[in-house]
Image (cartoon, rainbow, N blue to C red; front, side, top):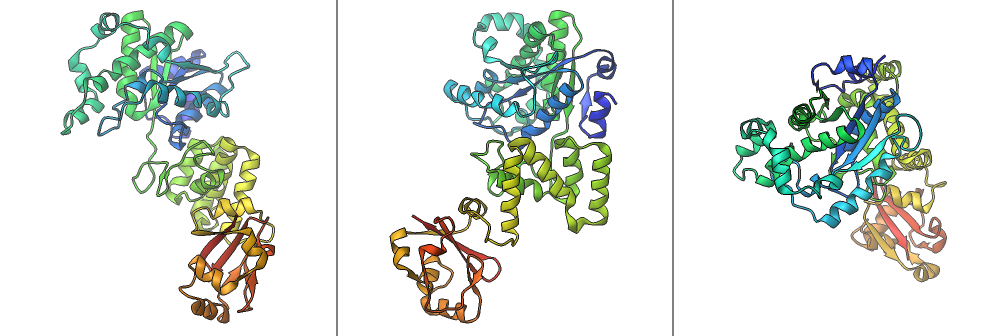
Length: 422
């Protein structure tokens, strides 16, 4: 199976320039994808182009990850209904520094004939003079053609319009293609389907300036079955940086994938082969309650992004969330799982003496008063660290604190409070 056939069964090909299939079958190519350094981390929406570069490298082609250190100062209007806030040079440079470390988990930068490269377009966009850019690049673009681009047309129809800064973005991206073609013989650019206009503009510019035919391939924009943007949750963006989205929350994001999306995501975001994905698709149809496809997806992607150890911790934490005993859990695991559960702080000195159970329950907000807390215990509805409380006048001491750090109070099956020992 060739690269394009691999992309096709995985439903990754939204469109290509004419003749790409023949070139891919005939010779190794050098391809690039641009990554905007608009945040301190890439997010799960970046995984599709990252995995596409990684697949390309496995098929013997050479990937280039282009950090938009220069274009990031401008902002791409593609897919945006309003202009992005302009970032400072310092913000863009700081964001750009973190991208390679994340990409190294997917791409081989050090060894092999087709070792991946990293480039930053600030290196050639910052030195070029405005007049030189207009003469050498701008003269090859007509305003008519630029206005016809979908991203521009959409903004022109909006009340706020589009600034000259953003209008010029496609010239900068097209010039990137020329530079990468000159330096590294790059002859393929990939990106999301919203980048088609920018990519074809780059292909045209290389042809006009260098007389060479280069190509483009665009990937589908990932949406979920509800029609909302992939990678957004009620808690916000799902990041690749574990400091911004913990491996446990990352794992839960994939585990919660809708049945209607999971087979597609297995094709997009894992290395699983066609037969394995087909078998999991059958499971979704015949045994949807088992959610084996979702568990496989969560395991594969979490291990890929965060490593096997982080996956094991996430799976153990997930078991806690769905009713596994707290007996063998660590304080850190409990705090990870229940980080969004309401919590209170109690000093270690106070717990050394002991706090009345009914007082702690009321303090934590599981009961409105001590008398209500007493009724909860009498009815058998209160638990400390998953152990039912039977003594109304008992005390909670530091001995109850898991790892000396945390106590879990629970009313009924789901209503929990966390006591943090300080």
